[in-house]
Length: 372
Image 1 (cartoon, one colour):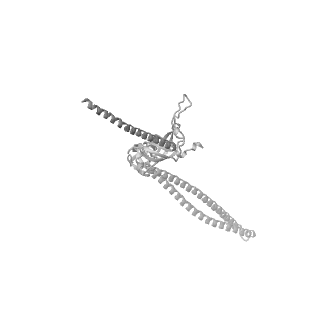
Image 2 (image 1 turned 180 degrees about the horizontal axis):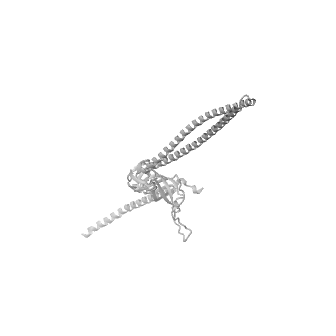
Image 3 (image 1 turned 90 degrees about the vertical axis):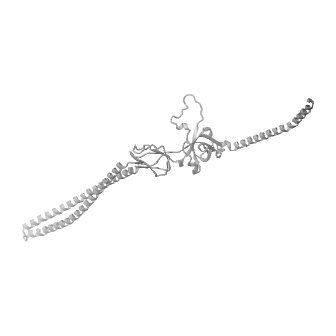
């Protein structure tokens, strides 16, 4: 029984020996193909890196930011109404908060009354001047009559003087004529003096008009200031945005400058990416940026380098580092770079300040600048 099994064993060995070489050949072929693919991929990567990849500067030390508007009143008073709620989108001019305006309206009415009093005083003085001018005209007419009488009386004295000397007329008559002439001349002089006094009175009245007009202008300025305060009782949105961090409530007493809420202009968001100083050599404003937003599951949007900060982050800190004292350890500094987001409105509505992003700047446009 054992002898017949030996040929079977020999056949199996022979079969194994004939099948193994093809399997080994296929394995070597697969390894060679994979090695060739790896080499080609390495060459492709190296070429891509040398031609473009090494000019891509990336950092995940970046966040979406915005310049928020602090909503604060210009005047002090009690809040009568809060007209918006948290997270509400508003447009420029939308009423946000109303402050009780009774005190300011009373001041406005008081100033308007002062203007009315000053205008009435001016009108009264103008009427007085008109009356004064009429009196002056009447006095001038009387002066003309007095001067004519004085001339007539003086002429009578001259006419009667030779007659009295010749005895044709009595001396008593001449004396009476001389008295009349003196009285007429005195009346003419008095009338002229009265006219001068009345004319000076007009100058005084004109000064009163100027004073009344100045008072009216002062009152009008007070009315304008009071009107500004009345308008300021209704606090409006200065631009489009979304309401956040609202702390004001009806009945609260607010002072000028008290923060009541924050208006976030989401249409003006931008990115501040803090690149290492070793990445800044070829970075320039205007270069394209690829932005990967973490909150949008890595969705990528486009951007543009808008500006580069004039110093590192440490330069503008409250306590700037001073490397001139003690032991020195070199630390790679970071430079803030402002990036403008260029995305569709549908995407922009989803972006809010504070979100983390990863930015990649294509600096190839500055290739070779440092070699000049």
